[in-house]
Image (cartoon, rainbow, N blue to C red; front, side, top):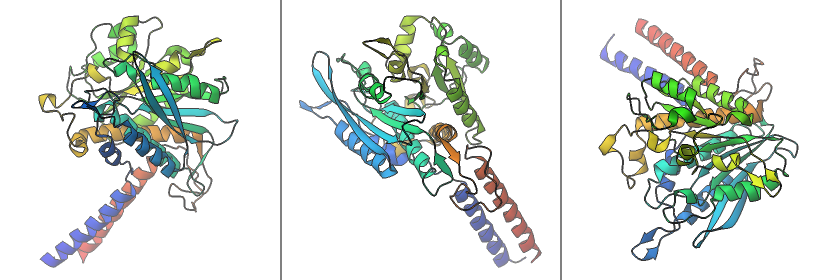
Length: 412
């Protein structure tokens, strides 16, 4: 075969493989959101002597994204009172199906501390929530492969005062649970399947002894402690924190199953972190008391306690060393530099598992419609909603086709 024929074969192979990759792409785009969330968003932030509150820009961006996806939107304005009064706005997007359906919630804090990393805590959580909302809606419209059968609420929380240095007012997530969600549920948790909270989901570390499990960690998460220790104390996992008495094992199992099904990012795993029945209070408050899921667990009104099921998806924040060490991307770095290949893979795997879980629990596959919304001529209605089998089949088919074409061309 002469040089021109070899070049022609390589061009054909490249085209076919490109088609295969594009067809199997997850379509998760975290960067577009991270670029919009790469500023500290805090009511006490100052530039010189001037207050520089950048939360409104983030609020508007999240609101417009929710509207773009086709969600019904709502803004919950509130005042949080400590030594002073801080106004806040929770941004809510609702995919509502019926009054009688089950309800699932996905949430993330969008404000930041005065001096923290706006991408790690918690721009990454907001970005994953936005992509989950977008792709859930994209895959469950009138002409799409899935039909929605349950209500999903997406909410970006404001005023996480537990992370503020000098303000001890009520967090926006607590006010959301008490003053918005509980009335929305008509003070009846029967149909509420749980909240999935995304808080600090950007840091993975495959090195041994990168996961900190000292102190009372073993008393709070006894089973997880043994499993992490047996794996060399690596920070290679996404934690899913839960309470044993909340009846949300189905949610946990579905998310864990979808996470493990994803063939990409095999170096990462999901770690169930179920709390002990009577854990040390101080350690629990230090590790978990500042995150939104805690206010679902501790929900109460004038009639008494009404705990709501919730799980926290987290990289465990300060309990995990950064793989970059002193060369880690500083809080002022660009989103594209922050999103290293490993970090992107870690966050994308979480996002894909979340999307698949929403489709599993609150959508059903339409008969005779494939994943692209086209008629499925072979009548296969699909057995699972994970969205990965189609990618694998497409990739395998395209690879086989590529090899056959190369063999044929080599004989030419």
